[in-house]
Image 1: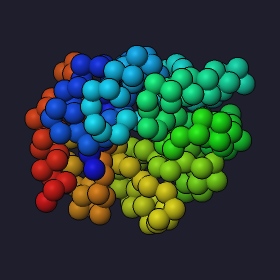
Image 2: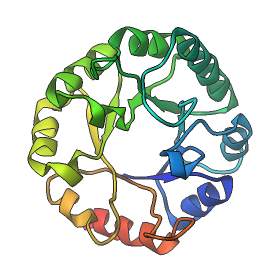
Image 3: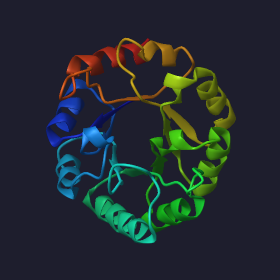
Image 4: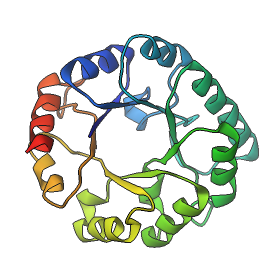
Length: 215
């Protein structure tokens, strides 16, 4: 499974045309991704036939949210669900940089969609404890860039997770290193497919990563 993270409607359509098997739909690449317009989700729902995971992140910066921000995020999640999102990707931390289990669990219960923990996970001080907290919260998948920093930890997370929750490697994955992750036993990867210094995705990157996953 190749999930492509897109930051414009144009790139989302281009990713699907190139063969992306799942979309993470965001805007604002510079901030690491924020909530996309509902109109994008609605347009994609009626135009493409791949699962769509919509980002719920009200702003760039840290993942410490106020009560008002959490309430707004729930409202946003419900709107994205109505627009056609198949799943949502979000996350929030406490001031001690642990997963905010109370608010994350409440969000998941209130929006009523499968939810993915985004790379807020990478800021958790104890990732193995964060894995257990993600499971407690009700997430179905964790997106993490730990493979770039500590491949041993990524393997440990995969082993600890077992069948309880999916671990989705992301962060800097491109055609030239995708095989590194498949060799570790990962059957799904996440990429923006945007070459360094380029403003938008490269369809050939997607096609090369798909070939890697097929081998």
